[in-house]
Length: 121
Image (cartoon, rainbow, N blue to C red; front, side, top):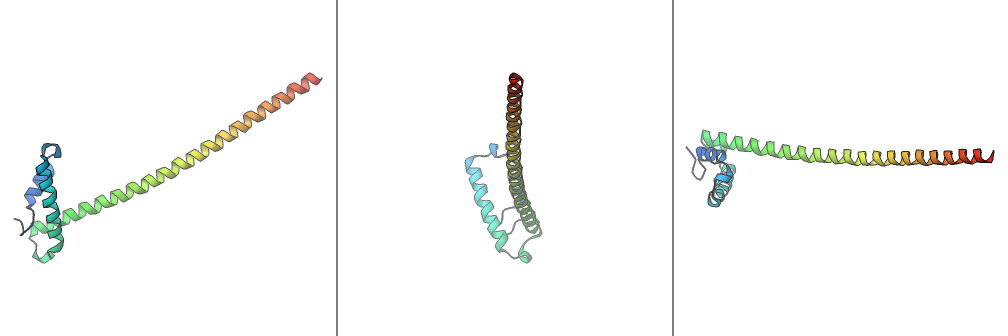
């Protein structure tokens, strides 16, 4: 049973389990429009005036939206953390390259000085 102006719960389930690649453009458009109307109606109708099924459907939808928002926030945080690690790794690689360059240069200078010392004797 659906409330006046609300999308039937069985229709929502049917639409959710049918893959998008099996739906026509018209069906997708219809779903989008009816989902938005249902969402608006769900937010504008007081809880005490909703049927049990619509109340449950609205709670599930709200939980889904909250979970999706949390995942998106976590992904942004994770991306920031990964970016910080990458920048730190770049900095450490540059430091290592500079150190190695100094060691090699120092070694070459030391070898040249030793060769010069040997030829002077």
